[in-house]
Image 1 (cartoon, rainbow, N blue to C red):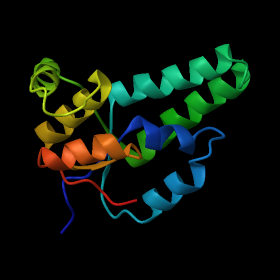
Image 2: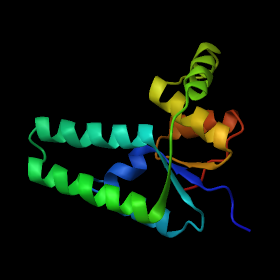
Image 3: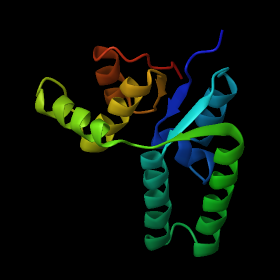
Image 4: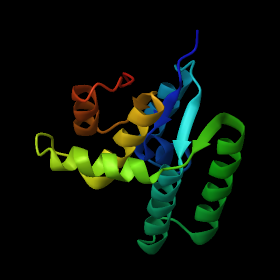
Length: 143
């Protein structure tokens, strides 16, 4: 029986569509999964922000970034389930941050809130985020 899926943090998505030290790790992690892949609209925004920053820093040309956007969009349409962040996710993320018992940045808290709402696993390369997610009862995929 398949699970509800695996939510991909942006730090897993970025290496799949650009030159990155984590590319091999990301490819191997996805290859091992037998779950539906889930990408939020917030992860799409984060991915886009990283690519745009790389263009501004002259690490990537505009045409390379546009190719990465296109490849990512096609991959999402074929291989991932896109979900929207809801206002309740923002409220939940705020509550997680205000607990003050975990070190969470807003983007990580928002990803964890989405994962908790939809009841899936989380795949992240951020060990701090993964540890906090586990402490909050989220199943984190080993990678």
